[in-house]
Length: 210
Length: 317
Image (cartoon, rainbow over all chains, first blue to last red; front, side):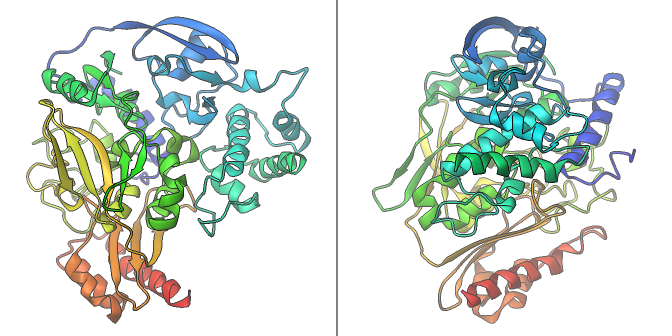
């Protein structure tokens, strides 16, 4: 591994640097000291997860990702980088995909959250899950729940006319093309490099819908 | 992450007061940058004031034909807005050139404006950084500086402002609306909003303690062709090495601001008088006084070439 100093400043680079930093900070503790350090605080929060009301009392520091995985035991959503760089933690909140690692659980009072478990189950797969199986859109599978949540949202975003960096004319509606899908899926990293099969799976679902 | 207490604000002025009254308190909106930094303990607020739910999420036309963008309008909502796409295309294009779909859904207008630098020495708490720890020095100077600034820097800091959206807002002559803890509102011209580092790189903008951004306003549309040309190490989801936001009129005149090269969106109005003479003349004026490092000297010719590409595209249209 390169040292943080040699590492390029991409989000992926910061990931490498970030891990090293977190490990070293413990011994040196030279981060800026707040005026009067706060004590750990807990708060109540309730939100809907996959159609079910959930009431929790959490340390304010708990991310939505940790609330889902560690408190609600919905471990389909994965923790990859924990810094919004890899997309493994992608879930939908009120229909919009977000990185659940970069959101505090207490900020989701009353929200409607959909995780991979809410999209489909082994006996009744969501069309996107079935397409990932059919097209072999994964190898190790760790990024897959995030990829699938993101992919479902991507097709909704294109349908809603939301432009992307791959969109030519911003005054017309974006089309479903390989270029659009690749650009819109760029926040989901696949370490195994299953990208071309992932694009095939998404295209398949888009074709079924059209 | 250090512990913190949390509250949901009930009004913009109450939010401003809540932060002003508690040293070490911070606003949180989308949280995508702040939480990242809190996990690394680069930021360690003792209290968070959640400003979501203040009703600052609307885009409205102003009485003079411009646009008022609420501080909490998401990047996705702003880039998708029909008026923005039609009349302020450079802004839509800049936003979708940044981050990922997931982040743009959460990132807000004000939060994006206030995002911190991605200088690796700012992120690494073991390194000297005058921005993170005033007076500790700058490990970036003489360090790895390929992504860092070539102009507007000081002997205390060579970090860049990392965003894309603000570069477009600068070229559009936007202004920033705020409310103070006392409830007073004011308007800050966009060019005065982000500060150059000088001896105080930890002071990044014109906001007073507790002052809350409530909106960004755009003047009436100026027509022309709108471009946001971003050069980066990957095709997507990477910060700019150089980005050019430009609005070019039929006669070749126009405006240009550059991202990725300075501590703030870089615009030199006087350089724009040379727009009809071509990219070389404009970039020479834009970058007069640049002090690149060996690592980032490539950015100087890259600005000229990125601008030349935009101008060629404008002529071809």
